[in-house]
Length: 160
Image (cartoon, rainbow, N blue to C red; front, side):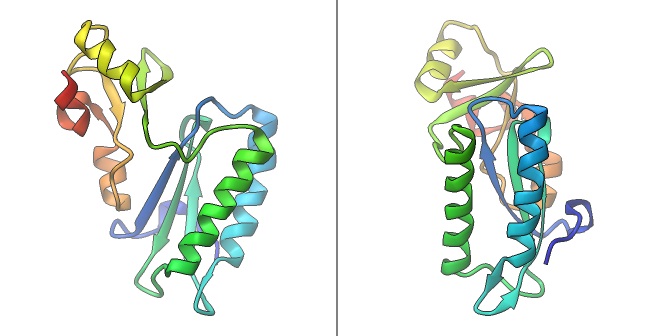
């Protein structure tokens, strides 16, 4: 059952998929109905899942699930991964590679392989003040408070 992401409780589970590039406006106009249709039909063991999504910066797909009604099962999580894989194929993007880092350069969202980010940290091209996206957050509350933070407040700090 599709709901507005903003109405999900802060305890809702989330999954963040960062894209290797920004989705174009036309792609967003195609992606949003596909996401809505998937989440409207998403179930776990026959029970509807109360879920929503947001597309921050047209660069991330964030799925949120209110688990107070029904929790995601292995099969429903697999279904969401298959959906994301179909998005990767449809738009020729990378969403499932977790060995990449997204961070801000001014208002621009940059995307680098982790090894390149480590080198940038060593070379002082990024610092503890660099705004990074902590895609390891697991709840909507953490997403709202601790997703877009200075590197000093994230796992990225270990490279500085």
